[in-house]
Length: 191
Image (cartoon, rainbow, N blue to C red):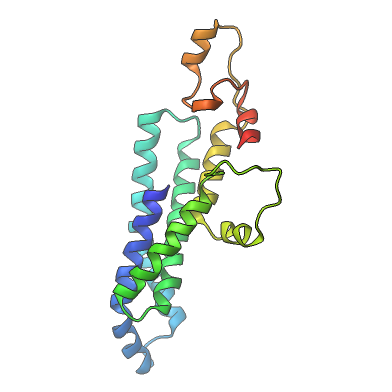
């Protein structure tokens, strides 16, 4: 998730900021509006961005044997990539140069990565969460992608109880400390 998000955001920041001068000059000549440029840019870049997401989803499914359908993986990664590109457009639109865009984009992405990971620091979920952090989480494409993928993978999953202890451990997904759970819904509750 994080790799695709970084790649999409950085590519967009770099290209969008470099094209800014040309776009402003053409807009001053009334060649097209900002909305027309943005829509054309999105439709021109979307196939390339989506292709990386589709390749990643295909390789991931093949190598890991995830339960989630290929369609779910592809849709989730494509939506996350498109969200990261949109974030890149937003950041790039306020930056005057590619260097400024990168300097603004990296800290924003790092913050979205940190809040996007499911309970990264083991925070007590019984405590009232910080309101600012909750608002920041809403804008993290990484958070939404991870939640969608984890839910698709574990919802309704059951682990066989008929095997001996060691056989059961070998068959469980590699989940670290959660390896002793009874079903996927229990995993989701723990997260």
